[in-house]
Image (cartoon, rainbow, N blue to C red; front, side, top):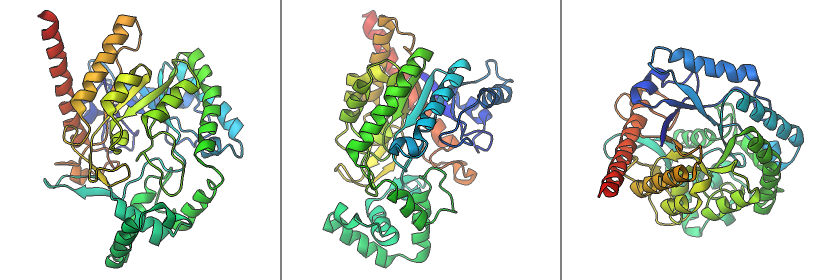
Length: 406
């Protein structure tokens, strides 16, 4: 398992020196300043690679850009509107340029509109660390009484709607404004300039599209880009929905094992693969992460390892991001399945037998609490998570060596 670390570029409050001290060697990044649908030029790609190498030139072995996360799929491609065919061609050109620069693994997602959704970006847990949280009642309050989305009342049980109504009556404008800001943060380009009317307009653009339509559009996208990626020696890996269920009336098509089975069979080529995110998929009580890895592991090109504590034992409920070994995902069992897949790849002669992973998210602890890094991406919290994951990996590898020796 190859240790990597997500870095958001020069503006990231967690520096590459911090990453080096954490012990990771591969960098996961993207050209976030380039709009979806535009081409990533060779010059821009080379500039980011040179930046990473120059900032780590003091190391015995300078870091490299290992994984692209993410090369975004435009909303026009997802809806098949506007210049979507031009955007697909631009995507393929970007893949060509990435391959020529030596990149091999490209993560993307097919989530309509929302990249991720949380209601609290600094939820305080019992030891006073903070983390990101999705509170179902707060979200329903946002949907019903702040956004006032048409059709929202039919999406929730009367019990949940009544709890949201009660909470709305108990909150003030400050709380409500913070809730809106937190939800907007997960929108592509989400910032303080977006208004509730802006969100309503974005949602209206998706009204004609249901689950089947979005699946068909994804299949059309994959039929075009996967053979191209295969010819370039690239691995594409689709990230799951976060959280893995429908929100705001939008269809979500990458939330379960069945969704991923559909994905990998839609274009049956090695380049068509999975980003297995244990935190996103783990928010659903009916997702068996070790089992998914055992059954679909041959298609997993990239791993996000994080954990969540589900606050309700239901498919659609509240959760918060826990310590990496402290939530509802059986992390040792998942890592054991990953190591078994890697061994199978080695025996089969695959050249991708070491699967890149990164410690995904993390709780804000110690100096993180004053650093104001990207939500979910603290320095020390992820360092702690990486150390915990590294310990599990070392323990499992030792046990395997001991068993083989006996």
